[in-house]
Image (tube, rainbow, N blue to C red):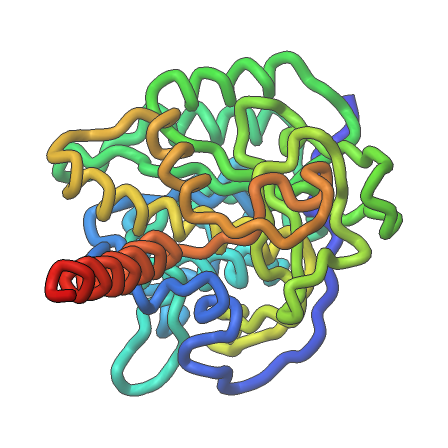
Length: 333
């Protein structure tokens, strides 16, 4: 059995400071729903990746716990630091703090992060470590009885491994959405299939990539299990050393969706006045997508658009007011 690896990605730029609200966060309309969603407060996203810089200024207040499942740092389970960079970047896109004195914002800047280092510094990880990391996320309980809201994985490989599939199904069965990158082996043809696991499993939420022109990235995998697309080209986020970086890949699109689910959970559960199942959360996510005109194998349900329901509601109000005015005029005539 081979290892699982990071979905290949590109480092576009390393900087000391980045836009406080990155363009990707704006593109999915996260700021428009922050107030209604309390910025993700009370939710916890488990990130299975290369770890995370625990004292990054934009992340140190977001991390609720973590564990190392790799041989890095002499196998010290308590040391989940990031000796690659990928995991810190993903973590920032999910939930960087949006500090008043600077820094950068994530999709859900008041959510908390459970950092599970399942990939070593060179980017690879044993299947068993990843399986154990998922099971840890399922079983984890916080200091006040908190449980994991979402599992986020920007990793993949060509092998369909039964034990990996089974633990993912267990996570979904207990109500935890599992969000995975589609992969970056795309050939820029939307009618061909490229599969990376675990993204290709039907139980996960598989995320493809668009650029800021709302075009499918030429490297984004296409297949009949794509659920939606999110921005993943030139994405600014946190990076080790207290820095920031612009990266590209389906790895960068995935955390936009993971953070969005935290916001959606808070909004929808307030509206329904009860806890939602994994299937119901998925339905609420799909409601907040916008078709772009590509085949479903490329875009799934479309581009993540968190504020689209509010926009539709406002549109209907305008239509109804116009209709009421017209009817009144007819009666007066």
